[in-house]
Image 1 (tube, rainbow, N blue to C red):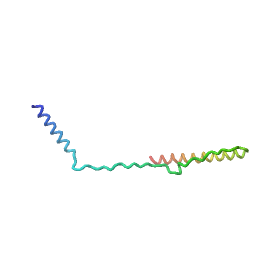
Image 2: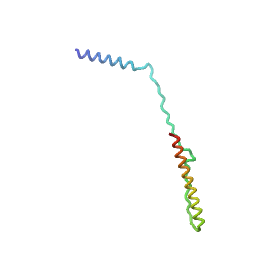
Image 3: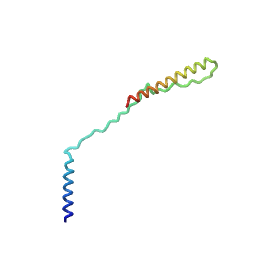
Image 4: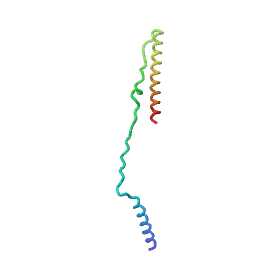
Length: 90
């Protein structure tokens, strides 16, 4: 009998404690909105294509080297731009 009294008292205390936590109306929290940032289109253009063709004279080698260095510089500038854009997102 003593145990029942103890259990009832304990249960009543728990219910009183838990009832203080309830609110009259639930709080409605809006769902989070996911925002996905994308890299600007100018930074993800394809790199210049490589040139292929016969090399018949020294001028052809010089022209291809000039083109290749320009293409590499263009690609490097795009990668640097992506890196800078990425740093700005932090």
